[in-house]
Image (tube, rainbow, N blue to C red; front, top):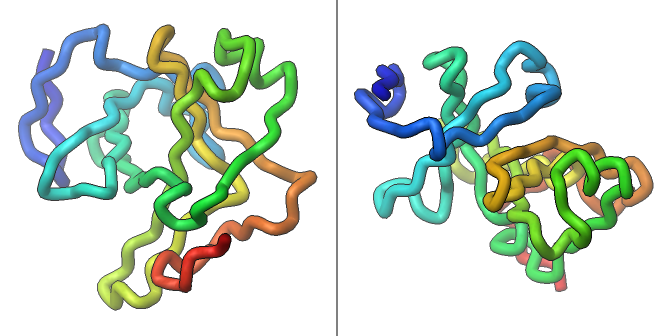
Amino acid sequence: MKLISPAYGELEYSESDVIRFPEGLIGFPASHRFLLLDSPETSPFRPLQSVDDPYLVFITTDPRLIVKNYSISITIEDMKGLGVDKSEDLAIFAICILPENYVDATANLRAPVLVNHQRMIGRQVILAENTAFSHHHNILQAPAQ
């Protein structure tokens, strides 16, 4: 299959590469299928490209690269929805905003994107109980311990 992404050009993928988000992402409930792109040129960032809307792409990264001891508690409902028994079976990504002035780059640590790569299913969760994490955490801020 092929997708023409205005941001990344022609992308070839198979159905097994598609991560399904049954509820969509926050603010984008109509986009359910995404590709997590991996390229040395974008590392440590990984674009999350919508298959449903080629103009929709989120820049993500591992939040532990920003906050060394980043850890989350997720609900049993979220774990069931992702088909896992323990949160350690999930990949965790933070959606980033990378403005032209890179010193203002931020990551949303309050609403991480969780992916079960075994079942290729994902979900974005809001960590309401943990106020230590911000929706706009400055990426270049000194890492928290």
